Length: 490
Ligand code: GLN
Image (cartoon, rainbow, N blue to C red; front, top):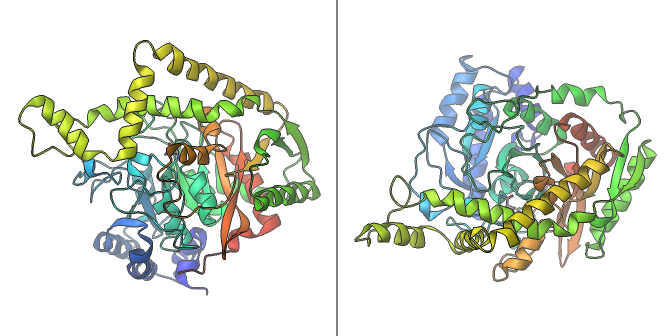
C-alpha cells in the first residue's frame, strides 16, 4: 500500500472499515507529518493531537461508527468548534473559544471523522492569498515562495501537502476554488443554502458557503453527502433532499447521456496564462471526444462581477463585523477609559488592514447618499448576472471555464496593491453572486520561472445540481488524470 498520508479519504475509510489500517495508525501518520512539515508551510494554526488520538481509539474500539469513521480532516478556522479556539486568523478573536460546534463540523464528527486541527486563513476570509493573516502567511507546497491562494489557503495547502486527506473551507467569492486551483486540489463550493452556515463566522451572509478540499472528485462527493442538508439552525439552508452524490458517480459510464457543456467566451480572455488556454483547449477536445456537445453560451454581465461582488461583500461585512465591539467577546483594548474608546480602540487594535479597508468600503457604499449609487446598483447588477446564468443553463448542463487566469504568484507580489489582489477573483465571484455550485479541478501544471505550479479548471452548474456537476467533474478527472500529480517541493 502507498504511504498512508498519500491515500484518498475513500481509500482510508475503506482500509479502516476492512481493518487493514487502524484509525490510530492513520491519525498518527498524519499528525507526525503535520509535526514535520507544518513549521515550513504554516497551513495549520491549532492541532488537536490528544483529542484526535482519543477519538481514533474510540473508532478502533467500535465506539464511534459512521460513513467517515476514523478519517482525519482539517477545518478552516472560521468554523466554530466547542473545543480549542476559533480565531478567523484575527487578533480580534485570538482567544475566542466558541461555545458550540458549527453544523457542518458536527455532521462530519457525527459521521465518525476526526478533526486534526484548524487551518490558517486570510483574516475573516477576506483575501486571495492567505497573506492577510494574524498567524503568518501560508506557503504553497508546490513552491514555498509562492502563495497558496486564499482565503482558505491553509486548508488547501494542508490537503496538497498531504497533512490531511480532506479539509473544509468557505467560499464567499472564490475562497475554496481559487486556492484549490493554485494547489492542485479539488475544491467544491456547493449551492448557496446546500450546507448549513450555522457556526460559520459570517463575512458576507448572502454569499458565504462551506465546501470541501480533497484530492479527487469521489472524496468531494462523499463529504458533500455528509455535510449537506437542511438545518433548522440556519433559515437559509435549503430543504432540498440530499442525493447520494458518491453513488451517482459510479452510475455514469463514462459520459452522462446527451451531456451539453457550455463555454462562456467571457472567460477565454487574452489575459489568461498560455497554460490556462492550453488547459481549456485540451479540456474541450477531451470532452468532445468523450461524446459531450460543446455549446457557446454568453454571460455578458460577467464584466460587472468584480465591482458588484466587492460592493455586496464589503456592505455585508461592515454590518456583520459591527458585532466585534470589545464588549461581549473578542479583543478589548486595555487602553480604553470610556465606552467609545472600548469600541474604537478595540476595533483599531483587533482588526488587520484588509478587514479595516473592507469595513470602510462597506460603510461607505451603505451610507445615505451613496446607497442608491452603489449598493442598490450592485444588487441590480447581481440580478443581471444571475439572469445570464439562468439563460445559459437553458442551453447547457454545466459551464466550463478556468478557475483563475493563471497559476500562483509570489508571496508579497500583490499585498501592496488591493485592486490587483481583488482581480484574482474575476472568474470565481459570479458563481457566488448567482448562488450556484462550482468546482475547481486540477488542470495540469504551468511553468513559471524555474517551477511548475498547478492551474485549475472550473465547472459551474445550476442550483442544487451538485450531482450532475460532480459527474462531469469525474469525467474530466478520468480523461486527464491531473489529480494524481502531487507536489515534490517539501
Ligand atoms: N478573495 C475574495 C475576497 O477577498 C473571496 C474571499 C472568500 O471567498 N472568502 O473577498
